[in-house]
Length: 161
Image (tube, rainbow, N blue to C red; front, side):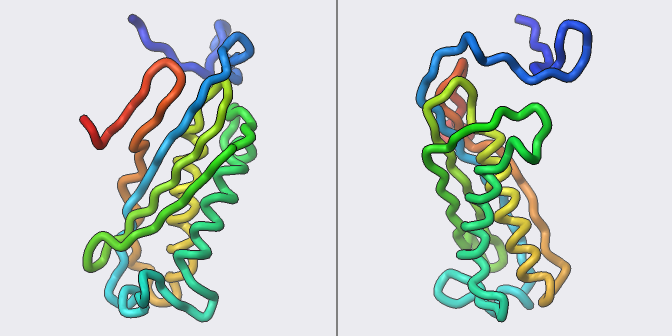
């Protein structure tokens, strides 16, 4: 089977993927990333959140991630506007100086929600960066990736393989 880019029409021009003939199915996706925070930031960690004068960092980032996931089609050209039925962002400390952000999106539709999950995870991470940069600019956001997806042609689960 030859793979081709999905957003190119027969003339070679950019094109939204036509999903009109697809069947509605249950679809979900989880994406995540890792944020490495320097000691100057981690000293402010209390009760699984970083408290700043701007407010609780992780709680604010969760809201930002959900908001971003809902607006993915406004940010990524050719992305279908989707009415998400669920979006959950989690943030957890995974070591002395690392935080993991995950975003899970769900809907019943004709196209997947991977881009929404990736957008939610990345914007949550960027919010953490923004709220903590007053303490240090030595913050690293890495490993943005799709973790799993269900529905559509192929299911995918990075953690079970």
